[in-house]
Length: 242
Image (cartoon, rainbow, N blue to C red; front, side):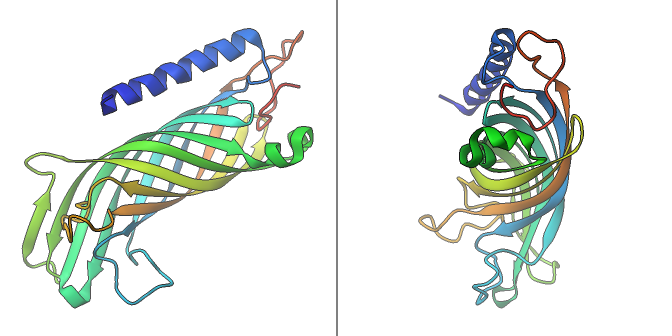
């Protein structure tokens, strides 16, 4: 199954679950929402500053933004998201520095930890912790130069755009602000299938490049599920039927 088919399948499942759970008014129904986030991305790869075990990523951070649609299904949340941003990194010892611009579209599934631990009592809380995992498709251009950026060493993505798939893992916190409006803060790591996000392939058997994304954002519930026998919508952050 190619990457386009994977995305198409995710979108089809997303829409199918949304319509099915709304029609059945089941325990797996929940609001449909959209949102935006912004934050910093930090590169992890061959050009990390060496000899710093407490900071396994680049000191350079780039601004990144994301937009998404999401559907709550009981304790689960399905999200389709697109991110646009960049990466930077350097290694003064090897006289190398790079800059990168990318966009990524991904599918993410998150699990509400409050629901798993506190069962039915989680509905009364105004916040939720969650863990997440997902799959993404990354497109990028990268330029590798010397440390002073006076000599171009290599380029990726200009004659043919750089392509990589990503495995995503992370966690977050969602806080109710007012009804239907929620604040989110999230930390994710995106592990790429390629080693040239920095336009440098250190070793064919070496660990692949990746990046961290730390963000804050807002979401808004545009469609909720009416309760059984009633017409009012569920409150924001209430991920199950009640």
